[in-house]
Length: 309
Length: 291
Ligand SMILES: Nc1ncnc2c1ncn2[C@@H]1O[C@H](COP(=O)(O)OP(=O)(O)O)[C@@H](O)[C@H]1O
Ligand SMILES: [Mg+2]
Image (cartoon, chains in turn green, red):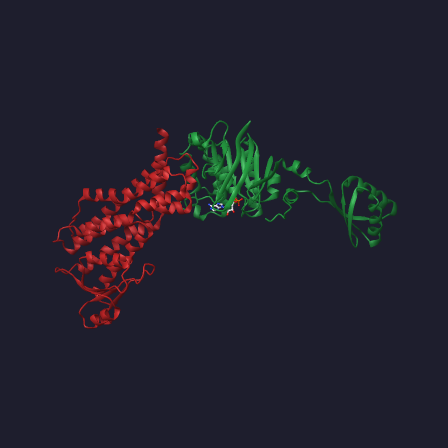
């Protein structure tokens, strides 16, 4: 069942085409991540879906509901954490939650939310005295207070330190366990890989590709990069290089003294052959690694561009 | 219905808390007018005869701001504008000759907000100088508010100061005037200001929720009303009991003034923001309606 369907969204600001032709569907209970560099059109896409920015073209439907006819009903179903969340500096997290709770028919309990976003200890501090991470967590808490079915999080971890980012990942996974549908944007590849059921890579207002993170990675060219280094003399590396070059699965090798970088279509077979040889020759292998393919490689592969964070 | 009541209650509580925690609101709304009143009351406590300072106004380069200020100066009974000059040197000569107590040099252009007060060096510490500069800084203060875009409230309010009976003693004049001033300022300072909320993106944040924006506006007005009542009460208490002033206030008039002035301006704002889809459009409309 699709809880959200977006078809052919377009939005321009003057001469800037922020969103060119964006379509996707989101299933109930999934974490759907929109990832792309700054300026790719993530926020604009979300704001159109959230009913804040009217699209120039395209449709947005939440099941049977659309913004034209069912605006109020949609607002009750969704929770939003905007990229820059404005809050009342002089009110506390607890007071924010109570105020926002009064806007909705149903609520999640305040204590539960404070616990989920780790703010129980700070619930009575005025917002102006909270740290960036604490504010961000409050913003997520506010997105949850009306017990929404769909939660939108716009770059929830941008600008946070690594520890705070991990904490937020936990929060997002907790929301997922509550069976919420989560639509997330980020420009951190590792985050998209860790959290999402599906990712949608967007660049310059256009969707590059959409799929499960591991499926995207599998789609990449089969070649993998294997690195290894030998103990002792260069000899071991030089001899190994000769042997490996004879294998048809190996396309290319770089050698730097005792270190080898091997590009191969079949890392397992390549290593097996290599180890047979090194054992025979009594060469000692020191370190070995196979580079993990990541979404970053997917982005580079699909756009032909460097990924800039 | 119960939900709407709860929503209203929460919003009012929010306004109450914010107002209570906003030191600016207390300072400008209560402390400042009280201090101003106490100072002025003491200055005039012994003088039975009318106090008047004769001043010259220098307007070298008439513009919107300078005209507005000079209009304000003219309606203030304490200041008698005896000379309208076009250059600062003429004014300096008049001061030297002791023809006027002070000269007020108005801003050269709309961007330049400096108002210069010229006085005779020997008089620098005199009561008159202090009164004139006090009044003047108050006007400039008001002008700043106008620049911020809250013109309606002030313009309406100042009239109550001048349309009172002519036989007012200065105590009475001050009391009445300061109350009106405080009410006007209270409506502008400290409390949640729609313009400021929009600037910070709070309106946008609220629009992501099923909030009822008219309730929001209503609770804001209730808070302003409450604050004004407190202001009037405190100022009147101090004025009447400490300085024996008579309260020349038409409560009904003040209520009407409050409603017509502050509310209409804000109400229109709330009304529009609860309808209009985009913030930019709302802004344009609000600005348009303000004139
Ligand atoms: N209100 C606006 N007015 C003009 N240009 C805008 C506006 N909002 C976004 N843009 C432009 O649209 C593009 C996409 O922006 P945005 O959706 O914020 O990207 P992202 O969230 O992916 O960083 C950018 O080039 C940005 O400058
Ligand atoms: Mg963004």
